[in-house]
Image (tube, rainbow, N blue to C red; front, side, top):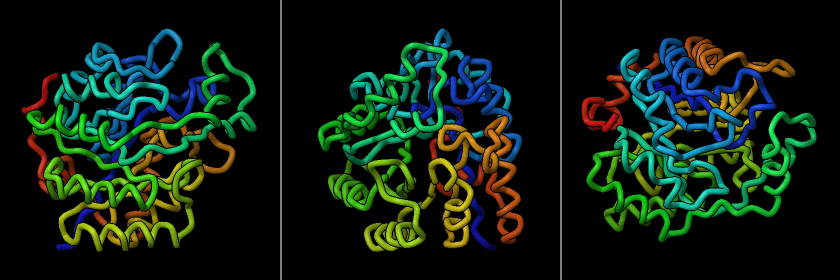
Amino acid sequence: MAKKVIITCAITGAIHTPSMSQYLPVTAQQIADAAIGAAQAGAAIVHLHARNPKDGSPSQDPALFREFLPAIRDASDVVINITTGGAPTMLVEERLQPALKLKPEVASLNMGSMNFGVYEMLNRFKDFKYDWEEPYLKNSDDLIFRNTFRDIAYILESCSDNGTRFEIECYDIGHLYTAAHFLDRGLIKGPLFIQSVFGVRGGIGQYWEDIAHMKRTADRLFGDSYVWSVLGAGRGQIPIATMSATMGGNVRVGLEDSLWDRPGVLAESSAVQVRRIRTVLDALSLEVASPSEARAMLQLKGADQVAF
């Protein structure tokens, strides 16, 4: 039987601000509805950030996560993946708290410090509802998203007893070698869930050679002991997901990574993007993994072992 494709859907994140799209979920109810809709559309995993409902700014307050996680859990069997990335402006101790306290099946983990520029979005978006949005974008030309070896070890060691498996986010080739380093140290265990990220300013590009290089390197480092997925930022979302699928990989879509459905048209929900990539997968004669199948592929602990 052919391997089925895991669709991860990233619901809302730290790259975009609320004024960029009226469809970006901000409140707990909006985030819950968006995640449930994505699951119903075919996502096996939903990747979740929280926002301050007063102004839509990124937040890692576990109390905000608790406002929407139970609703998603009760309405769907979808695998819940909580960010430890938060926002590049946050300290690692703050970013860790939701995964540490809520013990999800999956949590994201960035594999390296990097320049993380979103300032070019000011070329497209000019009008902002909240005071924090424009400086947040503008100042990213002088921002380092900190993920040192000590930071990564801190997160892994803090969550070592939680049974949480990490979505290892790799924005460049060196991040794969960092993942291999922590595998050698025994702080992470296979099968690794490698999420290769393409198209963020400061990381690897979106050319097919970049994607092939990432895949070849991961194959050499991890052999059969990893599950590969990709995400493309912005307009590269569907083309890059398509390339991953044709190379035997898995895919990630959602409003965290791209606000767009097609050129010049905002996606009205993350579920729209899930359905769009499903159309591609159907055309490639590929089947989509269910949440239970994704749990088996990633060897997850199960939805009954979380703390929410």
